[in-house]
Amino acid sequence: MGYSGTRYLHIGRLLSNPELTTFFDTFRNLIAQTLERLRLTEQANNASLKAETESLRNELLSAISHDLRTPLTRIIGASTALVENSAGFSEEEKLDFNKVILEEAQRTSELTNKILDMARLSSGEIILHQEWNTIEEIVGSALHRLEKNLGTRPVRTLLPDNLPLLWIDAVLIEQVLTNLIENAIKYTPAGSPIDISAELLPTALKITVSDYGLGIAKGMEEKIFDKFYRLESETQQNGVGVGLTLCRTIIETHGGTIHAVNCSEKGASFIIHLPLHEPPQINWPEGMGTS
Image 1 (cartoon, rainbow, N blue to C red):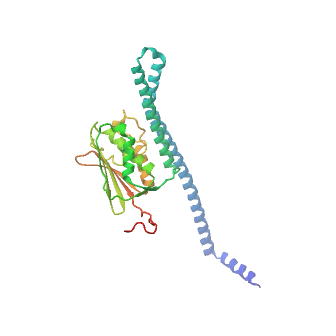
Image 2: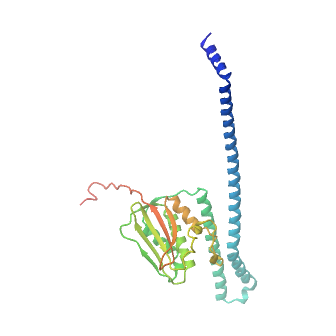
Image 3: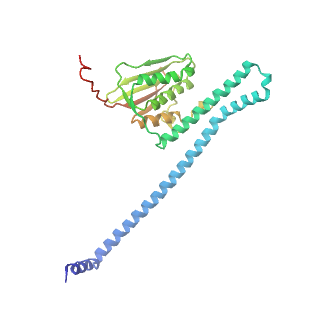
């Protein structure tokens, strides 16, 4: 008998062993049960994802309809008045109506942009365009952007001279600071100061935006970062509740963290930690960079 015949005879004897047969049957059943569990788990995950997506869609539609109602109502009211009774208004009154239309249209545009940014960031469609930037320039750009909103409100900045360059997407980090400053303007008394500071830590740059309002309700320090969450006092404010969620998404995409705390003798403080990276080596041409 050749090698093949001997091998098949050996296998036949093994299969005729009742203990081995029971073992193989048990092993086969375990594999079948495991595959079935994996199939059911996948179905459950798909169902959960579908339900979560549907819930998110409903929340988004509800939030949008709530927050667009006020500016659209004012736009329609002002434009209707101009169309139906333009001759009855003075030039100054017409200018006031046009200002209302412009301001509410701008609010609607900003709201839409925030929602689209949130959707793109959440789905991973936005790619960071990181370059070496200084936090001083980004803070300055954010304050310049909000100059009209700030009015005469004092903004105190404490940015040490020894701060390193940051490997970040300057546009997105400016958006974070803009959102935080807008929040401070919205929820604090007119004329109260806003503090912006930075501190160099061993592995990160700590950036803090503080206000002098009533602070955050106890236990809500994390809740305010949830999608579409709105404060009870926000019912008269524009905003779909994505500003802080957008901030956290941007910071975490950079590998950093952001959280909120209440500070004694102040209101709320939003604290950002952005990781430090080794700056590139500058190869000076021969004869330069040395004394």
